[in-house]
Each structure stands twice: as C-alpha cells, then as structure tokens.
Amino acid sequence: MKFSDAIEEIKNRLSIVNVISEYVKLERKGSSYVGICPFHADKNPSFSVNEPRKMYKCFACGKGGNIYTFLQEYLQITFREAVLMLAKKANIEIEDDFSSNESFKKNAEKKNKLYELYRDAANIYYKILFSDIGKAGLNYLISRKLTKETIKKFGLGFAPNDFGYIYNLMKKKGYDDTLLFESKLFRLYNGKPCDTFYNRVMFPLVDTYKHVIGFQSRTLDPKPKERKYVNSDDSLIFHKKSFLYAMNLAYFSKENYYILCEGNMDAITIHQAGFDSAVATMGTAFNEQQMFLLKRKPKKVYLCQDTDEAGVKAIISSDKILKKSGIETYVIDIKPSKDVDEYINNYGVDSFKAKLNNPIPTFLFIISTLKNKYNISDPYELEKYINEIVDRLTEISNTFVRDSYLKKIALQENLDLGILHSLLEKKLKGNKVVYNNETANQNQNISLNNNINKSKISKVDSDFIQLIYLLPEYKNHILSIVSSDELYDDIYKCLYKFYENGVSMSSIYNKIIDRDEDEKQIINTILSYNLSFDEDDKQQILNSLNQVIRKIKIRNAENDTDGSIESIYELNKKIIDINKTIYIK
Ligand SMILES: [Zn+2]
Image (cartoon, rainbow, N blue to C red; front, side, top):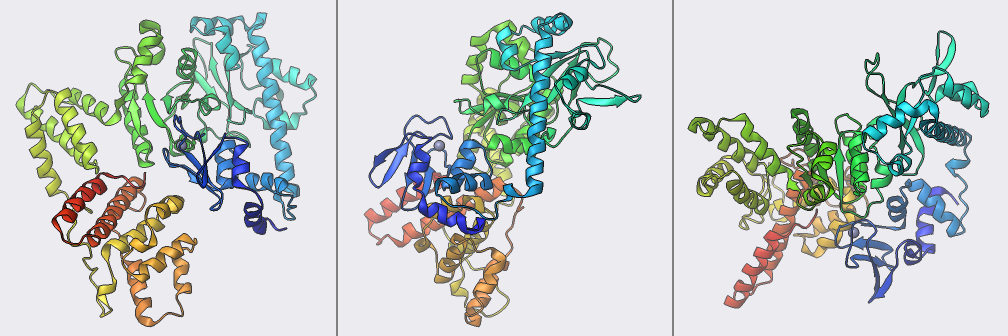
C-alpha cells in the first residue's frame, strides 16, 4: 500500500484506545475512555479517548488529536515515523517507504555513526576527568560545588591539555579520519591531526532521544586565547539554535513548568538542588526555535536569569517570544544574588523552592524594574513612570487580567488605584480597539461596493471564518466549541464545513464553481475582506477569535430568549459567563 493511502487505513484498522493504552492507563467512562493526561501534570483524569471519533482530548491542557499526533507528542517522533510504526501494528506493508530509499538510508547510517562517535568521545572525556590527567577539571567542578552524582548524571568530562590525546584514542578504537574530521571534534593543524578541545571541561549536549550530539566546553586557561565557553560547531546531528541544555532531563519532569536559565552551570546547579525541570540557553539569547522545543508540552516557563542588566533584558526579550506563542511566563527573582548558583549557596534549597512556589508574573516583574529608570520622588518623573505603567497595561487585551494587574501594581508600587484606573480608561478609549465587548450591532454589515444581498453577510461570522483559517492547528478544538448551527447563514455553515474538511482557503473557489453568481460573490466578499490586525501575531489572533466566538455565543443566547423577565435575567447571567470564558487558548 502507498504511504498516503496507508494513513487513513491504519487509523481505521487500529483501535485508538488500544494504541494509547500502551502508554496511558485508560478506564471506560460512558462512551469514552479516560485517564491521567501524559502531557501536563494532571491530577484528575482529564484525558479522554473517543473510539468512534478516533480522537483523544485533554480537557485541562487542551492537547488533542489522533493516533499519529499522540505518538508524535508522546514519543517525540515525526509523523512519518509514527505512520511507519503503526503500519507494522496494522499489518500494512508500505511500498514507498522513504526509509528504504538509498540516500535516506545513507544519511541515517551516517547519523548513527556520529551518535556512536560522540558517545565514545563523551565516555573518554568522562573517564579522563577521574584520572590523573583530569585532576584540574575535577577540581574545577568540585570548586563549583558539584557532587560526583551530578557529574555522572550530566556526564561531565575533561579534555586534557594535549593536542592529539583524544584523537589517538579514537584511532585506536578504529574510527577513520573522514568521520573523525566530520565530527568536528578533530581537525588538521599544520597538517597534523589534533583535538579541537583541549584543557577544557566538557559538557556533553544530549537530545531528548538520549543521543550525545555535541559538547559545550569551558577552558581552564586563566588567560585563554579562545573564548571561555566554546560549543561544538553545527553538524548533521547538532543545531545549536534549536537546542536547550538539559532538555533531555527536563522534558520528562512531572512539574508543570520549565525553569529557563542562562548557562549550563545554572541548569546543573538547579537540578542538583532537586528541581528537574531546568534548561539553559547555553549563554545565548533565547530564540524562536527554542520556544518550539518548550512548546511541545503545555507548560509554563519560569525565567531564572542573572540579576544584572543583561539578565533583565534577557527576561524581557524571552518573554516577548514566549508570550507570542501563548506560553505563560513568570520570573524567579534571585536578587540580591547575582546568579542562581550564588542564591542557592547563600540562601539554601528551601528558599529557592519557596521562590518556585511563588513565581512573579513577568508583567509585574517588568513593571517593578521600570522604577529604576525614574526618580519617583520628583513629581514629573513620577508622572512619566505612571504613564509608562499604564501604557504597558493597555497592551494587555484581557480585561480581567488587566484589572487584576492594575490592582496588584497599585499595591506593589504604592500608587493610587483611582488615578491609575482613570488614566487607563482614558488611554484605552484613545486607542483603537479592534474588538470590544459590545453585544449590540452583532450583524453590522461589511461595506459593499456592489449590490449583492447584504442581509446574507455578517461581520462577526466573516471574521470567524477568516480567523479560523489562520489557525489550522486549532481545528479540532474550534470544531468542538462552535457548532455549524451557531453560524449565521448557510453560506457560513458551508465555509465552516470546508474548513472542517481541510479545504484550503485558496481552493474554496474551485469548490464553488457550480454555485450561482450571487452566492459566489458573497463568498468572495467574505474571503477577501481584510482583517484589521497583524496576521503574524498569534496571541492577537487568538484574542480576536475568542471575542468573535463570544459574540456568536451571545447572539445565539439572545435568539433563545422569549422576552420574559426570567429569560432576560437568565440571558444576562449567560452573557456574563460568556464574556468571562476563554474558549480557545
Ligand atoms: Zn493534559
């Protein structure tokens, strides 16, 4: 069977309950099966598997999908790997299996050889650390208060102060020069093969599949000719930009948060103190690829940076990237210590634990750092300071969150709540708000320059269709929240059906070729209507979608009332609830 045909066939042949049961204990409850969600720190069984629909869904963290997405997430494998794995289970032979393709095979072979080589090298560095020629390295690590257990857990090692030492050992193990040079652990110097790393403490970089894929090294030379920290170059198996140190451990932590810190030593110190969810950016700025690594599990991120100016900057820029992707961030403020190592040494593990139990919302942390910019005993400076706070508050679109921050800031910074509040109101009115909570004008029409049937067009529903097309990854979630019946007109129901069936926006036109001109024109108007915000800003799209869904829900609630006092009372209650609900997270 062809790969593309097998995808559906496997889904049909296999029971999703049986497949997931291999990894999660499931119990029957009504028509579905429930268990403890493997994707977040679940206490109640929030994870539900539905056999007829061939889907799973966690009602707490929102993760959901089919057998393939489950294995991809759970085992950290690719879609193709998941299909091939399940094909075996379903007794389906796949003819056009890429992995039997020659170049794919060669590539995989080379990767495996490199994994082996790096593992061997890591073992050699580790052994040297505990030998006579490794004393300097071991002394350094002991001076950093690492225990032998920690050194073993992280596989730390030492590259001796000898140009060709490791090279000769690897040759003895039978490695040929081509692979040795390709690994970048060795290079030619004046025509002579030698080690890239020497007189350096070695930190093996391990991926979530437990492969050693590279090293970070720290020189012991007090006056180094090269940088203090040097990482392996990128290779077939290592891409520095999409790597987080200690993710191989933190990924499997039961905590519902990651602790994101700067250096490898910070992460190791935190692990040694008993907190297994720390990862480090290895001294560089946190980037988007690393965000995707964190996003694989629905966890919060605690930013734990040095307390210097660079650390505060790092918090602000990491928060920006994380917030954009909908990840909640908090700050672990380790002042007055300069870094986490010093904090744990001076104040102890329990004190650090108390910080983790009570992390500061990043927004509040940033506000508290603003104070250093202004001399607030001067009334003019104080005014500027308050203005900046209020400006930042206006960036928060969720009214509830904004108000609760406002109160906290007033208390934290000892400012008058009333003044802050009226200033905020003023600024908000001045800002152009794209969607507000008004329930009136539900069906305000889009201005049309031609004379098509305006009554068939609803702005709210047009926005809804446009927004959901920007969020294909939320499809199942959206479908479970808004039913087709709740939409305004048959045309929207039909467009929603297209979305459900995975028809791309650009191919909708081909699907409606047979329809009458009037309808085609309406659809054309709906799809070409411009949204009034940045399509790259995911959080804004989600916020807007939530607003649109609220409007749809309120409209339907209004249609359900009969005008009696009781029903209006009920309606008001419903509207309050709807306005509080965040439908899509
Ligand atoms: Zn969950």
